[in-house]
Length: 355
Image 1: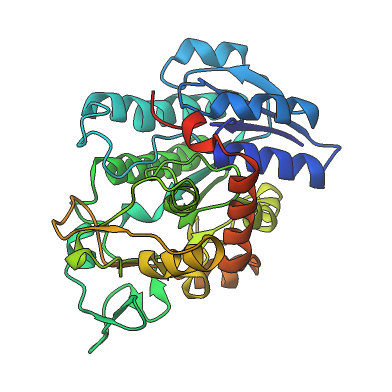
Image 2: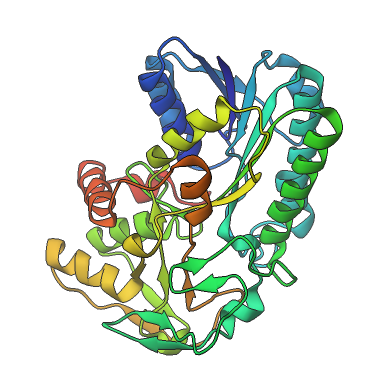
C-alpha cells in the first residue's frame, strides 16, 4: 500500500503517518507540507526516523504536485483549521479559499491522474451555526447540555448527526470544507475512484500545536501550566460551552477499513468523534488543570464571538454501524498525554505561536 498524507507535519498528519508506519511497516507512507505553520518543523525529524518520506508541496500550486510520488491513496489532513479564518485579520478570505478549497481541487486532480482513492478529514464546522447557536441549553455541573423538548432534525442527546443542517452560515472555514466534501464526492463519482469523508470533532493529543485555533485542549493545558492568560469568552463568561475530543490515533481502525474498501454499499460521509463520553466544558477543563497544577484565575469576557456555539458534540453512530468503529481513548487519557508533553516541553507555546 502506498499512501500520501497532506499536511504531513501538522498534528493530525504527523500522528497518522507515525501510527500507520508503526502498524504497517510494509506500507510506503509519504507526505507533503509547505511548512508555513509555526511548529511544523519540529515533526520533520521524528517522521524521518520512522521512515516517512517527506516532500515540500504547497497545495495551492499545481506545479508542486509534479514532484509527488504515485500512490494508492491520499489522506488529506491539510487545511487552515480556524473557524475564524478570513474573519480575524490573520488571513484574508481569498487566502483561506486558496488554501482550503483550491488545494482540494489540486489534490482531486492528482487523484484523478493517478487513480488514487481520497480520504478527506473534514470538520464538525460544516454544520449550520444558527440552529446550534440558538440551541436551548441548561447548565449541569458547569457544562451546557441541550434541552430537547421535541424531536429535532439531525440532533439527539447523543449529538449532532450527519443529517443536521449544513445551511449557511457555517463560517468561511466551514464553507470551504463543505465545498471540498462536495467536490470530492463528485470527482469520485465522475472519475471512478473511492472517496471517504470523515467529519472530525476536536482533535487533541500530545504534540498538538499550542494555539487555540488549532486545538483548544492542548492550548488550554499548555497555557495553564505556563501561567499564560486565559479567558472564558461569551456565554456569560463562565466557560460552560462544550466540545468533544478525539485522538487522531483512534482514526487508524477506521482508516484501515476505508483503505481496504472500494466504496460500494456504504455511505461516504460519517461523523468521527469522541462523542458524549469525551465531551467537556472549558470550566471542567479548568478544574482538571487546577487539580493537576494548582488553581489560577481565568478572566471573563461575556461578549459573544463570531461563530461560537454553546454545545457541539458529534454523534458517530453511522461510523459504528457502517464500519464497527468507535473511539477507544477516553478524554482523561488524552488530557494526561497532553499534560505530560507540556511538562516535558516548556517552550512548546513559544515554538508553536503565530509568527
